[in-house]
Image 1 (cartoon, helix red, strand yellow):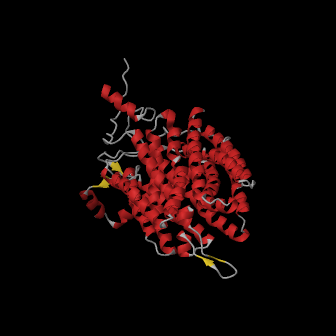
Image 2 (cartoon, one colour):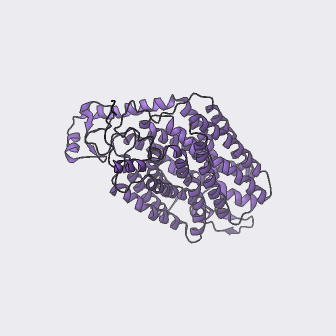
Image 3 (cartoon, helix red, strand yellow):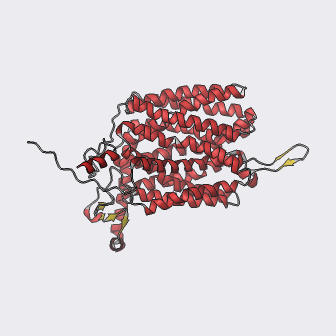
Length: 503
């Protein structure tokens, strides 16, 4: 009689852990990240410059722009400043995940984010707040690179995209809440908005260090006595790691290594990084997905920053922060969740994800573009709401492709480089460029139409992906095997626990 092949034991999960609890915690953290982005874009926090009439009568400015007397171009640079830290740090955190427990890395990132956000409230000029915004990017980098792979590992198979949808729903929701939060708090003092964000994030930063950490699929278990810091490196480059930290004796041994060996060890890390990068850059499916995401994020990034100000000037909204916040939060929640559920419903494949991405973006672009052509506020709100609903439906599918078109061990780097790309070529240049266009033409309606037209480019790029040969590599662990229960990738973790208890 045939017997089942014995499987290595699953590394014990910490007592606090359930998949749903992990999802909720990560959703709250993601929400706070984007509340910060919405708050700094709100009229209450961002404010306006001092204006003077031809007769010499001047009105005092308000918020950050008024206090530091920023032009629209400088204001746009400020919105993108934190991306500098994020762009540099995301690949670093992704690479460190192979030698340090990813859960601990998230704790480090959240601590930096908390410190930097509080620092924004103490800034005294343009350059000081710019530096703190860069540090906010450093803190956000670890979470953006590592949170989605954790969720993808622990979500039930039939609901993976829906869980990702719930996580990415926090992006539009956070921005919208940030608009409202910034508008309300900014009535008292814009600095209070940043201090409040830091206080709310502090408990999660602490939990990142005091909780027993989880481990990602595709990496050595946190509890193993010998985990290679290079994954495939030689034996003399293996160090004992427990919970992502070297013991005192091991640290001493590392410090006692000859300089030449240390240099060779570091060179191996960079060699491995570039090898992984080549795999990503040669993957046509990954590249097309990210190119479409860049064009998409170019528009969404500028929308999120200039939206309230454009709405105020085009349609004379007296409460633009709350109006845009309300529309964005409703459409963001419904659209993002719908995108995840629809992809699960039609079967979560990479090809189906590209179909959903291209058609949702195309029709979303049509509605958004048409909305800015109307002079009626109500017509604008109705059409723009439908457009946002469709545009936000892309969040779960686009990240599903990033996670499943690569091997598990490459997921943190895949997410990191996707994040770096969509920001460095997307919303980093888009905010100052729109500000520059507006400074030149002084017509918010035309500026909005020019910006929205780029969504058609995003839809066309994603449509190309439908015709590319694609393969879901979620279960491909050939290069980096991980000792887990054989069906851990197809059974929700809660059901695993029940099975073990029954046994």
